Amino acid sequence: MGRFLSAGGVLLKKKAAVLLSLLMGLGTALTRLTAAAHAGDMAPTVSKDTMTRDTMTQTQDTTTQTPTPGSTKPTLFDELSKGLKARRPEEFDFVRHVVHLVDDGHLPRSLVDSTFLWARGKPAHQIQYFEMGLKARAKQMGVSM
Image 1: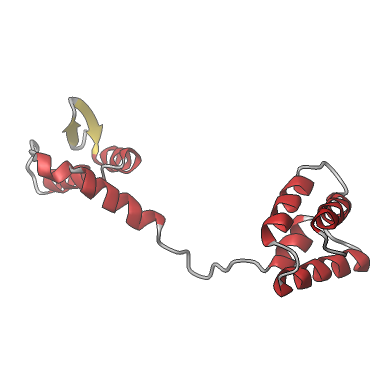
Image 2 (image 1 turned 90 degrees about the vertical axis):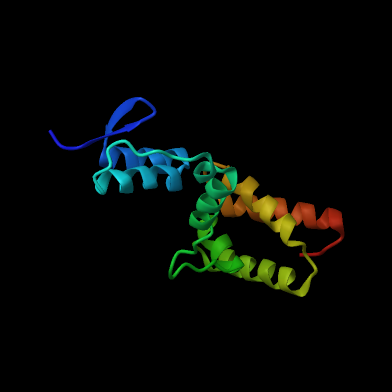
């Protein structure tokens, strides 16, 4: 039948114990249990210092902060043109104009981002909603587009 590992009174296969440990965020403690089982000790003991909150936090933090190789953040132009499905030259020109205004500091990025998210929620013609909405909001701020 294969080796079994007892964790908390429930019998689990070795691979299931490792998976369970990752899901529970107790990577260090249950990995040590699994390592002990591989060494032949079928009744390993876990001390309380093994399962401290710091150990669990460190294990979780290092896995979430690892950057993915080759990942880059898209430019504002790419984000707007692709996210709003710009197709016509006039739409790309408007996106370039918006990027220019943001780069020069005349238009706040937060205003562009919030209008972008609002327009993305529309079922169709997202770029047109973005253009009308941004022009109206910029006019309220005194920025001419």
